[in-house]
Length: 325
Image (cartoon, rainbow, N blue to C red; front, side, top):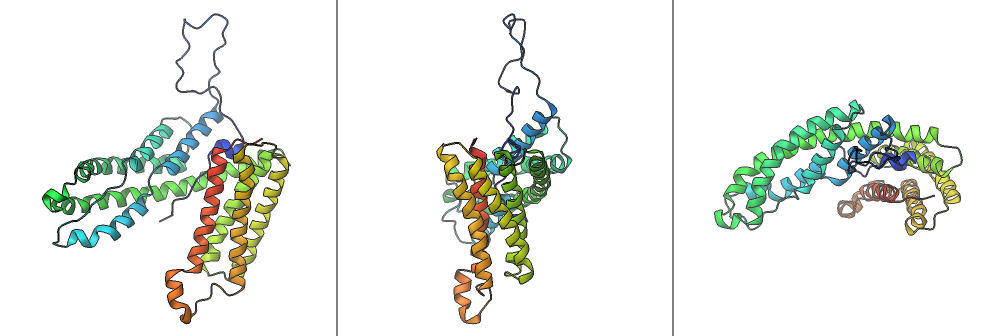
C-alpha cells in the first residue's frame, strides 16, 4: 500500500487566496444595512480550491490506517492469541478517524466534481463508519483498563474485528491517496503553466512540480539500489528543482521567519537526493555479506530513502503554513 505523505494545499500551489466564501458568515437579509454590498458568491474555481483543500486536510490530519494496522499486528497478534493475561493494551486516537471523516464529508458536500477523489472518498467513508463503533467500544475498555478486570478477554474477542475494519479502511485510503496524486499532478502542472514567468508563484509551483518528479524518480532509484540507468533522470530532476529554489530566493521579499527558513528546507531536500546519488556511485548501496549485520541494523538504501522523503514532507509542511511575497 502507498505510504502516507504530506500533501500540498491548492492555495499554495496555485498562489491563490479564497475570498467571499466564509461558511461562518450568516446570509444577508433585510437587516443588512442599506447600501452595503452583498459578498459575491464563490466562483466555481474557489469552490474547487476549497474542496481540494478539504481532501488535502483529510490526507494530512488523519491516521495512516495501513501503518496503524501494521503496528497493531506486530504489537498484539502474539499476545492476543496466547492464553496469557494481557499486561497492557492501547488504542489509536479517535481523531485519526474523525479528522479524516469530517474533512471527507466537507469535501463531498461541495459541488465541484472530482471523480478521481469523490468515489474513493465515498468508499472510505463507508469503511470508516464501520470502524468507528468498534473503536468507540474498545476506547471505553482501554481508558478504564478493562483488560485488568477480564484478563484481556474482550480485547481478544474484538481485536480481529478491529483489524478487519482497519484493513478495509486502509484499502480505501490507498485508493484515495492514488486519486489525490492524480489530482495533485493536475493542479501543480496547471499552476506552473499559468503562473507569470520569473515570478515567485512560478518558482513556487515549479519547485513542487519538479520536487514531486524527483520523488517519483527516486522510488525506482532506491528500489534498484542506485542502478546506473536510474541515476541521470533522478539527477536531472534534482537540478531542475535546484533552479526553482534559486529563482524562489531571488523573488521572495518576505522577511518572516517561516519564509527565510523555507529555501533552506528546499535545499536540504535537493541535498539529500544528491547525497544519495553520490553514495550509490561510490558503491555504498552494493550489498556485501561481510556487512550483513550492519545492513540489517542500518540499511543505507532504506535510510536515505526515508530521509529524502522526510525532507520533501518538511518543505510541503512549511509551504502549507507560509505566506511569502
